[in-house]
Structure formats: structure tokens, C-alpha cells
Length: 77
Image (cartoon, rainbow, N blue to C red):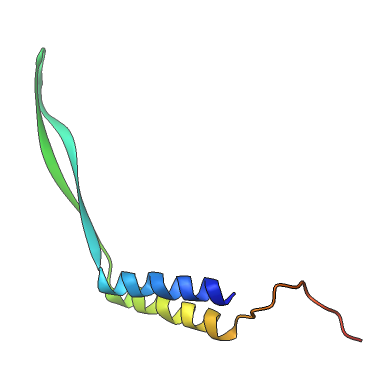
């Protein structure tokens, strides 16, 4: 569980530092018979840094309270 907590924390850190990304798609602007004109369209995806902080907190909790044992649950009587 500690590895999973560290991975979640790292994802949260990256989401806090990089608050979005852009990508470009090509789409048809004009289509008249044989004539086609293509154009680039910019898209952006953004999120608030608070989302990354929340994910970092969850990752820190999982890391702090996660066990390092690989054995299954044991029953003590």
C-alpha cells in the first residue's frame, strides 16, 4: 500500500504543478466536392490546483496508514 500511496501522491504533485494541457485536432473547414480545406483547432483541458492538493492528501494518508506486509489477513484468537 505504501507504493500505491507514493504513486497517488506523485500524481497529485504533478496535477498541482501542471494545471492543464493543450492539444490540437484537425477538422474540415470547407468541403465542396473535390475541394477540402482542413484547419487546426486548439483544445485546452484545465483543472484547479486544489484538485492536485486533494489527491496529494489522499496519497499521503494511504502512504502513512498503508501496510508494507504482503501476507494475507491473519486471524488471532
